[in-house]
Image 1 (cartoon, chains in turn cyan, purple):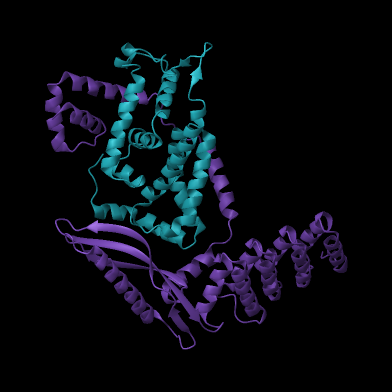
Image 2 (cartoon, chains in turn green, purple):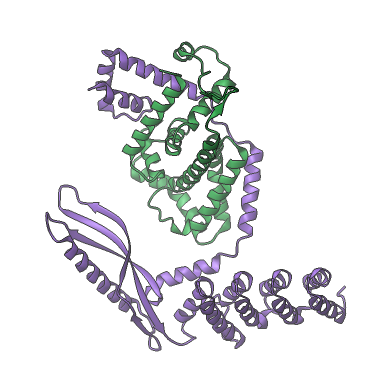
Length: 204
Length: 328
């Protein structure tokens, strides 16, 4: 990947999009539809991976673009449209994650027949397979373990890990999207990876 | 470098976020520290494992479905354009707004122990005066118009605080709400703008009623009401206002235009089909007289004749239908 573009280069690259945004702000539905088409794939990709559900992803898509349409007038070009849209989407995703967390609390504890609590991760493969990731493990089972571990993160930690690890965004951008600093995003990433490692290593 | 810091930097490095000058330093530490080496190995393993839950491209059907649903929702929204034009014109005429947020930017000097409160109050007064000069500068053909600030300017919120590096200077941006009052004739575009804003925006049904009544009277009197979007405002009030009195006034205001304006006709047809108040539906039928012969009007009348809850309305619809011969 090339080095970071100069501010001017970035402005020039954005120029046609700025025109589109201005037209959409002036009321052009065609222009707004064009913006949607530019970003819909990314929005769905993110929402789908985060929620794991096509239905939820569709809902987030709907809410995000309706919000964008409604508040387009507030966009003042102080950040890129990409960041602006993503900010809307990540906030909706965070809301989703928080709702799920509250629901999950009800069945956080699983009991076996004798009434003892079962540690859901007790059956995670032991240290051997973990320290040798090249070993063939059933992908599906592994995928489930990861998803399970991800649900143990706080919504913000999950969001930062998703944006950094899965979507490949820079920490500075992530900070902008979550309305915080790059430093905070970095610390959140660190906490997230620490928690995930603990989860996936089993008991230490 | 201690291991705690190293662990954090290992994460940053693994994700390409460690500044170049720190990478070398980290390498040196890790090379001589088995614990940190293991830490790094585990992190790399995590990255591999995390990819067992891969990011998938959304199914094209999902994309299509989502887009379709969005388009339908956008189509169902009331027309935004007139309100946007309206808001734009209002923001261009700050002075005419009843409650105008005025953005002011001031430098506050913050010294050790300095009375920042004194500075704050001084800023408030300065901004209020700045707002007034701004208003007098932009006030236009105001011969018939009288304006006054009816209350002290209040600070609505602080939007940013930026400290100049290596100094005691701070820049504070804040917004003020300035209560205003304006008097003028109905011909004045500024007054009309406010009436239109009030027709949709006021929390009080009484205020909406007054404004819609005034706008409707303008339309009935034949004063130019399309260019300024008054007709649109009445249509929005007819469709969305929760108060029947307001909707009724809006309907009356639209009456003269049913024949010449298809949008008005359709708005009235919608009211006939969907309005919850029987009086309004009845009034709508009467208003549709000039366009009774239109196919779409007849279709709606047929539907109403069969399905309206109110027997009187069903009767009236049938009467109208029988009165007008079918068009071939």
